[in-house]
Amino acid sequence: MGDKLEYCITYNNQSPVNLSNVTIKDTINANQTLDTGSLLLNGTATTNDPAGNATHVVKSVNIPTNTTGKLCFQVTVSSS
Image (cartoon, rainbow, N blue to C red; front, side):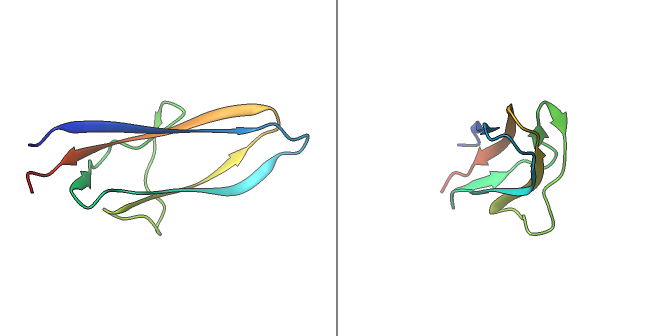
């Protein structure tokens, strides 16, 4: 296999207050591996938070009022 997939999580804050330290978390499928260096927060390279690893993407973000953002990452599908 070895195919590459990209996942994007879109988030928004429609409330009248800023949100701080919001955790975005996604579990990577067992037959996939997170591609090192592929994590993008609003188009800018970022790193997985310490709680994240090869099987979980974890990112803490601040979301100002009335804004939308996107967290994207790539995985490689294993042959098994």
